[in-house]
Image 1: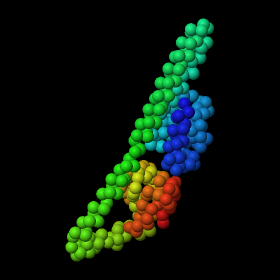
Image 2: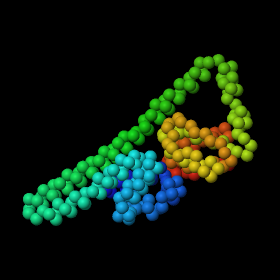
Image 3: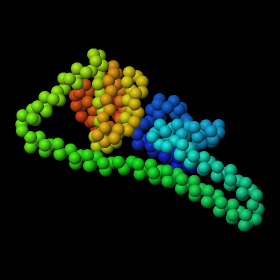
Image 4: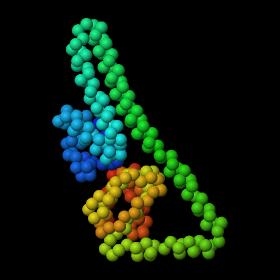
Length: 248
């Protein structure tokens, strides 16, 4: 049962979120979130409440909420099976048989959580892909060298920054977010309301326009951003995560 809470806490910390951040986004009380991460499931009225909170919290973190809730359910049933077997079995053979049954159930529950955690880890090795992307970037550089100089001038004239600035309505700001070297989880609020909460794939860009834009980035060191068409560099310092910025 400890694997359920540890998995939730590990995933939250990977995204650079605090308990307050999760509460603001899901409306789940901080003490309830802490109870889930510490496997204090006896703090809930019944299993129905426990399953609901596990499912909602896991889905918010990008996990399979239904599968994790089922894993909790299978492990929670173990004590109910264990007690009758131990009380009824008075002889040495019955006690040994009951202990063997409990061991089998525990192993099955532990294997279910292990497989789920293992599958979660397999879904994340997307990191090798950025290397392929970055190796592909030098190819465009070789093309301008082979092309005539006038074409290079024409290309720069086709992409001026002024048209981008003219698209932004007066009194508003345009923010562009791009995952550069690895997938990046972002949370975007426009004019005080949540507009987006997702993980950008490598090379993927998200653009938003509003009077006030608030952004939180998990792996901020891998996220590039532009404001009104101007390249501002990386969202965070090297190895920095959980960074907030407000525009303008």
